[in-house]
Figure (tube, rainbow, N blue to C red):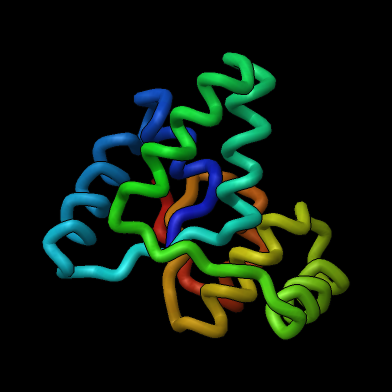
Amino acid sequence: MLDSFAVLAWIQDEAGADRVEGLLTQAQRRKVPLLLSVINLGEVYYRLARQHGQPFAEEIIRQLQSLPLQLVPCDEALALGAAKVKADFPMAFADAIAVAIAQREGAAIVTGDREFAKVEHLVTIDWL
């Protein structure tokens, strides 16, 4: 599963962009499922909107929605799972959502965000 750090690295051609591109290619070929939380999608939007304006952010979101990503909605069980993670580990709620999804789905989180180091014993982190 991708977190917003990985998506932004890919969009902005930063360190790790090639790895994310490879995962997207594998997902396109249906070799791996690639998850993204709708919360992380929103995080990508607001960060891009702040840096480049809302029209740019809206275009990127349209492009992301056309990719082979499985957008994961946030329901009550997921929100409470994330709340439990956040209660034990100080981290952004969007990151706690990613942890809760990874736990539920048995997925690794692809990220370069060092905030996830504190939960490596809970989920697999695939570091960029």
